[in-house]
Image (cartoon, rainbow, N blue to C red):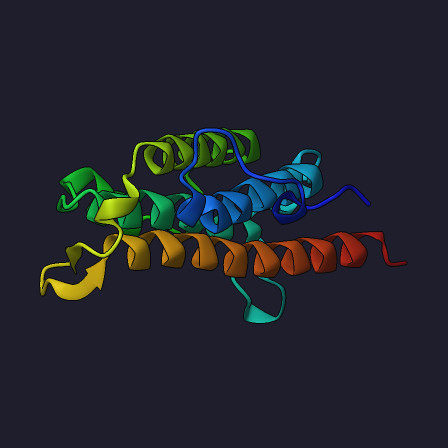
Length: 168
């Protein structure tokens, strides 16, 4: 097994306090792409035992990164972001389109991390229409944590679907 990102030293151009978030995003990106690259398109929207489909997880991870990093920039969500949220779980893209979008979102997140001053990490950030209280660090950490949570769910769901497909 390859060394995980958190044991591979600092990610270039990422502030020291944001290294754990960068490591988590890079690890999720690696694991998702390794498992899903050749995943059967016919299984992408299947929901074994009523669980969320692999397609949903891919859409949701990309969407969460987009939304939480938007809030970390002290911006409000756009109509396009609300529409994407409402469409999560709908079979609107192919596997490779979803993977490309996810890869792009991780890249965009890493670029934002690289430009985030450590002095801003405790700055207030309001979340959502109610402006619930958070901080830049809270949003960035939650984005990474939430990404890894759904990565785990995606990997298990995908493996269950693959095993069921191969069963006699």
